[in-house]
Length: 86
Image 1: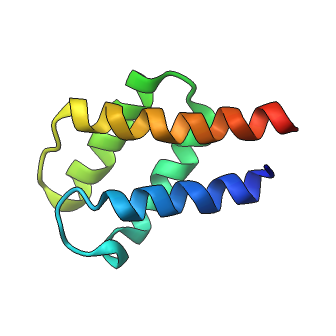
Image 2: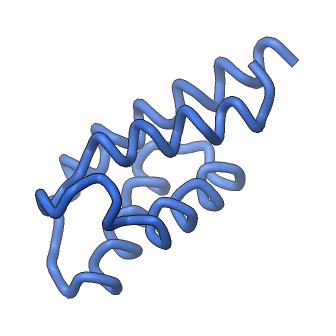
């Protein structure tokens, strides 16, 4: 899988996640920021904390860290799949 394909798949995972039930189209900026962090972070808890912070800053709502960890594992699985093929 190419990095651009990984990015597309990560965007889709995050759109489907919809943590505040606002609709998939409402998170463009946040999704972009999370995908950027995905490229630099490799540990699920580090990525989860960044996800939590990104969404909290934008929406002034807190997401439990456990939910962020769950999504971070899905995203990191995509990243490692992309790395293993390159």
